Structures are given as C-alpha cells and as structure tokens.
Length: 274
Image 1 (spheres, rainbow, N blue to C red):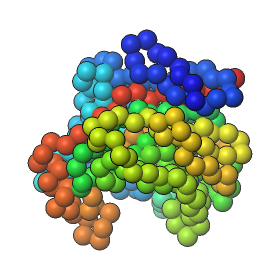
Image 2: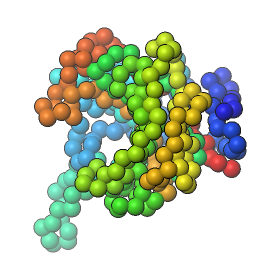
Image 3: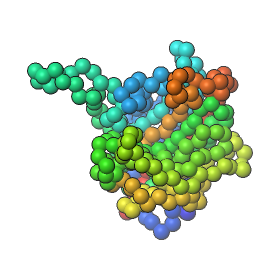
Image 4: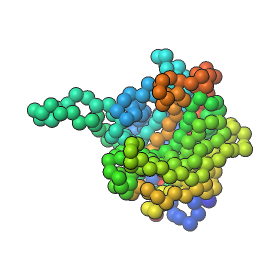
C-alpha cells in the first residue's frame, strides 16, 4: 500500500500497482452532515424502520459522530446513504390510469452519488459497547431486480462490526433478499490493538473481483457475483433486537444507549482508477 495525503487529514492507504484519482470524499470538516452528499436511510424493504432516526449523527471536531439513544420509547441510531434502494420506500395508494391496481413500489428518489469500480475507503473508530453494530457498505439501487449482478448489482459489505474491536467477514450478496439470494464471504478479524484506535477499511472494486483491505493489508478476495453497475455508499448503525420476531431492543442495546456509546467516522473517500 502507499499513502495518499490530504491536507491536515489522515492519509488514505491505497493498493500498489494502480493509479488513482480522488473523485468523491467527505472529511466531515463542517458543523453538520452535508445534505448535498448524504441523506438518512429511514425505511427498509417497504416499511419505516422503528429504530432508525435522522437525529443520530453529529459532526464534531472533524468526525461524524454516530450515537445510540432512546427516542419515543425506541432505542435508535442512524444510517447515512448517498443513494436509495427502490425496495425501501413504503408504498402509497396509486391508480394505474382508471384501473384499481397497486404496484408494490414506493416513490423513487434520485441518488446523490453513485459510482462504478475504483477504491472505496472509510477510516473510523468502532463502537465500544455491545448492543448495536456499525457498517461501511455499498448497495445497488435496483439490487434483486434480476438474477444478474452485472445488470442489477450486489450488496458489498466492506466493514461490519457486531461487537467491540472485531469485524466479521466481508460479504457480497446478490439476487435480492429472498429466495434467490446468494452470499459470498472472505476475511474478517479481531483486533489486538486498543479498542479506541481508528482503523481504515478499503475495497478495491475491479470488473472481475472485490479485494478487501484492513489498515492497508489485504484481507480477502471475492471473485463471484461482481457488480457491473453503479452503486451507492452507506455508513450505518443499528441497534440489536429489532430484526428479531419481537422487534424490540435487547438489554445490551438499552445499556449501550444509557452509556452514550458512539461510533466515529473520520473520512470516506472514493478513488477512480486512471
């Protein structure tokens, strides 16, 4: 890896053997989330998610600070995204001309940033408590609309942290989230460094493979179900328990909210191959 320096910010760790050009970034230098780059993800698979809020991220001292807290009787946190998945928006009553028909698709939205191939990087400090998780990932706006990931894309999980100081395997999902879903995995690790340390997670997305990096070192390759369509970026957090049958927070999630735990993002950068 070699370092790409940004003035007064931590350098990027870029793979050797390629030429890159920075095409999109957020260094979180302002005093609020830049709504020209991000929007809050509040819906999932056609329903309003009870544990996602648009009040869970602040920008302080050059970091996006994600928090978990109680809001209206729920334990909530936030997800940021640069685009929209067409399956997420709840449906509304519609008519097809004079016919009483209902398409199970909500209102479509323009994405703020979509990109194809290149290097994607996030430098962050993982959450310190159990009960919620964090992730840096990508998704196609039309994932699952066909069986071909080259046409309709994949979900690419660059980093997922379900417990302090550890990340699970990098995952690639395609075919949507139903009967045709396919999953491929590689890498993952537990850290021996202090939990308050920052780590850098990267993805080199090429036409024939995904190569994952942690702190400048290769951590797995996936060569199947590689997307050939533009995708959007997400930085997300979520409290444990809401995906269970009861859709209620776990005790650990409640405890994490009471302690004021945070997940910090230093930067997100996207590089083109040139």
